[in-house]
Image (cartoon, helix red, strand yellow):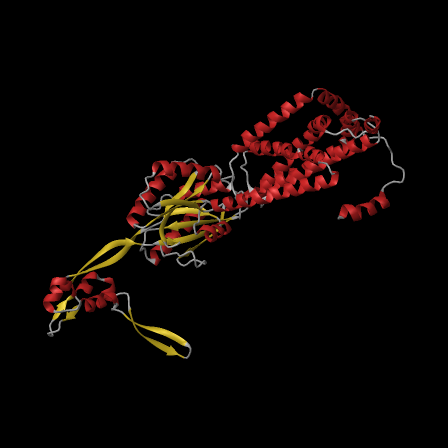
Length: 553
């Protein structure tokens, strides 16, 4: 809109009345270099097309080796360490553990850690239950300029993980506050990747989880591997002595009511206005905490005698399930881990193959995958729809502008050649394909088509003035060198600060800028060399001389 409205007004006001036709020394130097190269390209078109084909094939090869992720991990300036201890641990013990960890982190990382605080038990999200054995340590970091023990956040997390490895019976997963909440809302886990094992029997699920855990620990890039805690919760087991109960005529329900009174039995309801409170009866504290005292409780018989509870019931403490998770009505156990030093997509692909080959799943049991990986899968599905629609719309506009399928295809050929530079630049910098990189590729398609449009449109103008096809292509490419180079230089230079940025949000910006800079370079080379060759071979000669010859014939 600005180009069609504001720019003409500014041009009429500020541009000089007399335009100098003399080119600047930079343009003249670029033209002297480009002229012989262009002539050589037009003399050996097959060689140019062969080189272009090789580049496209190499792009396909390196593109398949890039790996992929949803978006690069954004440094939030804070870290969350999710710790899990043995089930049944008391609140006092959890608080003591949390205090020790806080002191350790502040002492070991004074230049990196600003503040630490711990939350134990109930989570902020209702779908994320937390027992007293689960704590979240929120670690606020100093600015990165002050760090001395690590250069990146990944290195700092590795150092912290090693520092906390000395705490017995504790498992830790490191993440970030926003990242953790997003993962919980999407998949109900707090890690990058989660192997979800579904089945019916808890013991079988626990055994399979151990096998999956062992496989994940051998895959390069694994970090913070952790299995959901299924067992370890102390459970009071009461087995009735049926023969004794029958001998004395005591009902089993009466005995079980006494056992149930340990936790409390609801016997009524108290109302105060609109408020309602359950009336609960339970045993005295000494009976609830002492198994021997519980066993000494007397139970009356129908004939008036009394018997100690231990005569009627075998009481023992056993380990029971601490949590039973379900999804769509099926029991599940989760093995989750983070990924460091490689892309998530290749890690999950290797994990799928290894688990399928090395873990023997009984009938009725299966493994699914979730976590941050789900974002990538969903984004891929959306891109498979959005990108073809965008490119199709661009092609339709080209066809409507030129009313020629041949011209639209030739100009559109700039898109794959723009991808060449984007893929090579990502591979050179060691970056996986991500959504931010995909946005860069979409932007590249517009730049590549715009440059091709400038050259082809001017060539058609020259042909309408009477020049032949090859002469029109040659002069069009030569005379449009300045706008093509200006577009390339301004686009690339504008993205250089973003490509080299290290500030907040730089992790997301760098792939986009890297793709655009590399793609602009390859797109410019296409416009200057490959496109003139293609149009000289497949373009339609619209020169006046050619038309007059056809009319005379």
